[in-house]
Length: 237
Ligand SMILES: [Zn+2]
Image (cartoon, rainbow, N blue to C red; front, side):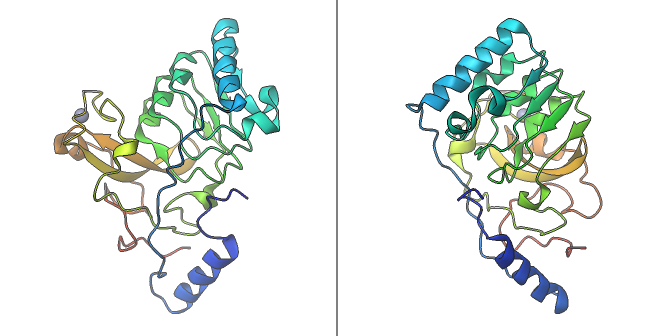
């Protein structure tokens, strides 16, 4: 299991079962973001960039880095490079068994993405809202237990006050307008994406953009929120 997994599963489950028995919200500790920076001097980082270039050149429809890089180089990749925006022809993104701790907002430019497979990527607890731009996305295979707010564990969302400046992209997640790094809004929203309900991080240029976010599905925190252990989630099933 990835070291950034905040709770060993057993400990999380104990907290949860106690809470269900006593019909109360589990008393989670506050969650912290995994903000590990990518070590760009590692050979794995150079290798993933080259692999993306190769995939752009040969227009392959399946992008599966573990198979091409091998487990050792793939384990050095904590985030995907922004150049994934050039993988416009890729239909299947297979991130099986990754050490990823975040996916960059540029995934939103993968306009032909149909299948998204971050399965057994236990460091991926959330996804960028920009993934909602992948209009063809129909199938996902996510390790749902790792997700913030997932109905199985109801892990709390990390708090977003103050905003996490390291995670602010240059452009608004909603309207694609310029973001003012000194004045922008950061919220969580849970939305049905392909096969799963995913916790999405929104970086919005304005409260107007937060106000137009779609409705969350039943059984999840309704609407956008700022996270933190005090956000009330429905009790786990
Ligand atoms: Zn906006």
